[in-house]
Image 1: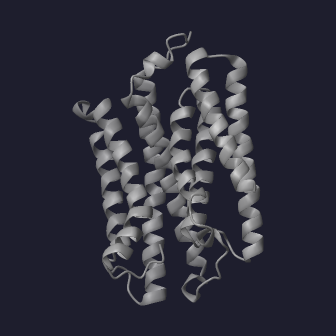
Image 2: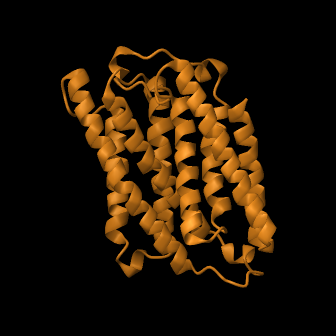
Length: 270
């Protein structure tokens, strides 16, 4: 019930943010931020309740990972909004969050049910690996929202604004957000490798999930390397960032589907 309410509030916040981009009204801004905070709060309570009911951290299924990813995206964006004092990117970032949350709420009931903790998951490396990965993915989700804002003709949405938002501001904020997420993804891969050694006796086995996590890491490393080059600024850089989050979603959702569909060998649960 709490998750469904958070989902509906997220839709409401998205509409407020896009209306704010057109009208730039003070009260619309507070309504947009307020409903986003309420959605985040309900999601927080829902995750805490789920963890208490399960007796372990809610990080063990694709459904739980998706909810936690939304929680991180919203948390990072709201902190960014408070420090940046700029709300017009909210609709684009919340669009990314809603994409992930729609995947979560449309999961079959049996996939949303509480699951017992498998022996391999009864390790402190579970929290270290998943939480660091979530922080990296969450930052990349916020960056992808800023990238979408950079790619579309967003000036049409802000024509009536008395304080125009420049593409340079968006690009700098986007690149800083990518730079924030990259070390966390790096830690996520390193902690995953250590966990694999303790669980399966090897640090790296070119498992499909491991391979695509490495591809995603290399993609964001490429973004950080090309950012100083003028040729890659603007829409090209934004396209790379949006495509990077596409790789994140494929690593999270597409790889497990591919493993099941063509019956690849994989030790990862999701």
